[in-house]
Amino acid sequence: MKLPVIFSQYIAKYVLLAFLIALGGVVIVIGLGELVEMNRRASHKEYEVPFRIVLEMVLMKLPSTAEKILPFAMLIGGMVALSRLSKSSELIVARASGISVWQFLAPALLVAMAVGMFFITVFNPVSSAMIARFESLEGKYITNKPSTLSVSPSGLWLRQVESIDVTFKDKMVEEYIITARRISQNDMTLSDVIIFLYGADHRFLARIDAAKAQLQPGYWEINEAVTSAPGSMPSYDTSYQLKTELEINEIKDSFASPLTLSFWELPGFISTLEKAGFSALRHKLYWHSLLATPVMLVAMMLIAALFSLRHHRRGGVGKMAVMGILSGFVIYFSSNLVYALGFSGSLPVELAAWTPPLIAAMIGVSMLLHLEDG
Image (tube, rainbow, N blue to C red):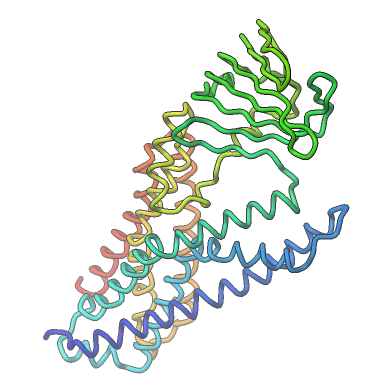
C-alpha cells in the first residue's frame, strides 16, 4: 500500500517538532552551563568584565554549540517522535494497512536530510559569524591575546601588539604589522617581508623591507633589511633584529578557526592557506565533516528507529531509550577518534570525515532489515 501524503506530512511535522524541542532544550541547558563557566572565567580577571559582555559571549557561542549537538538532538527527537507514534498505535495501524517500516520512515529520513542541508548552507554562515564575534570578545576580555594572523590572496598578515620594550631610534614601538608572500611552516621563515612599525597613538614610525625574516626565540631575525622612516634616508642592514614575544605555536594558533569560516568560505580559504605554505588539514576535515552532516543525521534517525519502534505493551521502553542514547554516545566518541586520526594525518581527510556517518547509516539499515524484514 502506498503511504498517504497526509500521513507523510503528519509524520514529518511530528519528527521536525520533536527535533526542534530536543535541540532547544539541550541548547538551553548547555547555555546555562556556559554562562556559569564564562562568568567564572571573567571573575578571575584583574579588571571587571561587564555582565552584558559575558552574556553576549554566551549568546554568540550558542549557534556553534547547536551545530555540535545536532546529531544528538536528531537522535533524541527521532526517538521521542517515533516512540509516541508507536505508543498511540498510529504506526501499528499503518503496518496493519500494509505500509512497511521503510515507507513511514521515509518522511522522517527526508526531514533529517533537509535539516542537515539547512544547517550547513543557511545556519552555518550565521553560526560562523557569531563564533568569530565570540572569539574576538574572548581575546579582548578573557584571554588577552592581541596578536592576530590572517591569510589572504595577497599573502600573510600578522599584527602584534608588544608589551616588552621594543624601540626604533629611541622611540617606543607599540605595535607592528608584518606582511609576507609565503611562509615556511618548518622553521617559520617569511619570504618577501614588509614590516610596518607604529608608536603611540598609532603613529607611523618606519617601514622595513626584507627578503626574509625568521622567528627566533625572543626576536625576528631579518635578512637584507631596508629601513625607511619619515624624514630620513633609507638604510640597509645585512641583519636586523626585532624583539618579539611571539612563539611559533602562537602564530599557528592565531589562524582563523574553521568554526569562524562558513561552509561557503572554507574552500577558498583552504586554497589560500595552502598557497601561503601552511597546512589546511584542520580546515579540510571540518569542511568534509560539514558535508557529511546530512548523512550523519539520517544515520541518527535510523538508529532512533531501532530503539523506538518496539511495541509499548512488550515493555522495556525505558531500557531501549537508554540503549539508544548510549549508542549515540558511542557513535560520537568513535567519530572523534576517527577525526583525530584524520587530523594527525594517519587517515585521509575524506575517509576520516565520511566513515563515521556512513558506517552508522549502514548499521542502522542492516539492523532494521534484520528486525523488520528478516
